[in-house]
Image: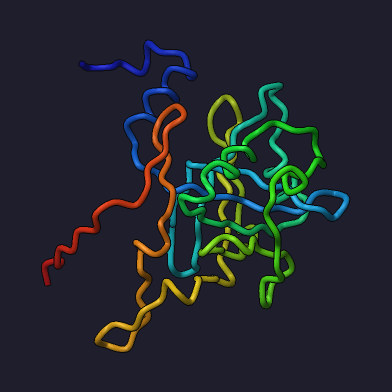
Length: 204
């Protein structure tokens, strides 16, 4: 089937894209609310962009009422955020934090997760996550008629669970992907767990 996107409304385009661009990593983003507590929300339009400077990007849409999501508002106002990657055991609470709340309400009050100081950074990280990136706002760009926000974050600190780190033959640290057990976003209400890891040497 050949699907012509020009003939579809944006909601149907989203439906097609999110079911075929799979699996997608999920950025579980912690930001600071105006009262000093924390907002937590998942975004699966998420990728690495650059290593010099170390940049990642999340794409943030709007709430059902067309207002800006708290994640965007908080990042623009305070300039810092933490991106986590959830493992499969956290898929349910991660999905729960996608619920639309009033601005300033904290998702952490609704789920049984805890935070711990993120060494050298102004925000904490989630204890239960095996990967976390401490980010400063690098740039925010708006795209499209719906003013979708592309948020570029400069990664200042990276946390990886010690149990997921191994040393390769050259003495470099290597991350054990199976140990991280990251959740991948599929379409609709579906997620993927870590499966078989293929090792294929790249051409020299």
